[in-house]
Image (cartoon, rainbow, N blue to C red; front, side, top):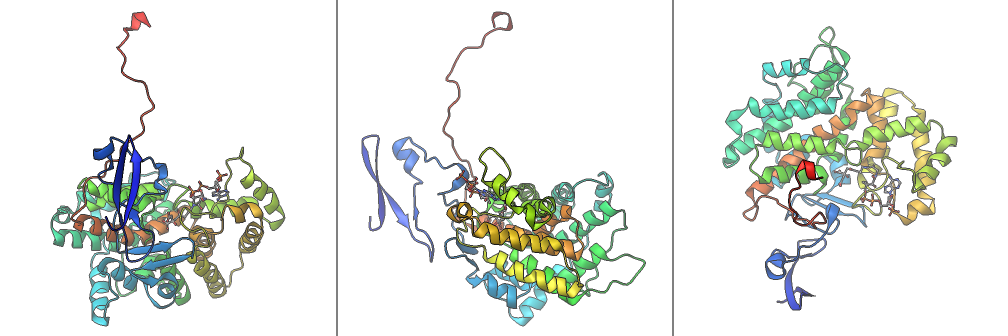
Length: 427
Ligand code: SDX
């Protein structure tokens, strides 16, 4: 074998092929390991495991690189739009002018929800967390769109992909409207994808809603920054659900559920709540000490990342976007100053330097979203709205992969060995 990894175990000397991608770490192909050795690899959290082959997103954690189909996130955030980046993630190439127009028009034709779905919201308490509503309503889509759930049919896959990308803003805006007791707003397809979402969220039937261009641009950029991120926890959840043949609506609902966790997409809500708890910069040292204390479960939310061990390029763009939104809305949130001071202190503290903990995409997003007018409970909803295109692109890639099979990890069993049942009167 030209490029291989040698393993001696159980008295055997074995070789496994080392596979190379176009860029990034090579992989050791261990698909035959269990058959040849009767042994599993052991990798809780999959810190050293490649679960699939993919051509969509590449991350270099040491260099702070994030590419979507080869294009750096900083260039997409500066020059592209969420619709164009969505087309890129789904199709692999930047669209021509006519391709982008056709795609945008197609998406706009799916923005409305089946009218009966509105009744699902009325089954929730008004104070239900919007992510609970998202899990329920998105999962319920498969009850309404039977004509696009046959995953073996490429046309079904295409229609359900477009429906999911198009309807997430409508579903998200309705979750917000329900929580504040305002009437649902229907989509207005004369607006951009993001402008339509802002109007459905903050507009009311009683008045004309004017989209503020700087806010629309900032929101669209935030959607680009959240669109996809390789095989993160929620994307892996979507792939695992999809590997059983589950319909795409159910798979995306599973991804939403996973994203909700505070260690993942829930971190933007947790980060802003943490900044509110810290309050003023003079309180920062106390919280830094808590974050270092092994006996204290407190963590600096919005800091650290499984892959990025240098900086999260999305956080850099996010930080500059804060100023743009503050200037456009003429707001000045003292929490931003606290966030900047917290970042400065943390980045100069040996503990955080040694553990390579620095702001991730979730650290600044909450400050921007709060300035635009979203309650903290909506932050992860917005993350899910944007990440839907990444989940859908990864799901389509998995379904089309000839090597794909149902995901079924094994385990290191440490429970009881076989023993006989003991009747109740003998215990
Ligand atoms: C996202 O995977 C993705 O790509 C996710 C994401 C995407 O776009 O899909 O980028 C989105 O989820 C961003 C991350 C958002 N989460 C947070 O901000 C929550 C706070 N951060 C952490 O919980 C943590 O950093 C993780 C979950 C993000 C990463 O965890 P790892 O890689 O499993 O690292 P770890 O938990 O093993 O921590 C390594 C060490 C530990 O100390 P030791 O046990 O080695 O002594 O660093 C410490 C941790 O205690 N640590 C922190 C910390 N994060 C890690 N200490 C204080 N504050 C933190 N935030």
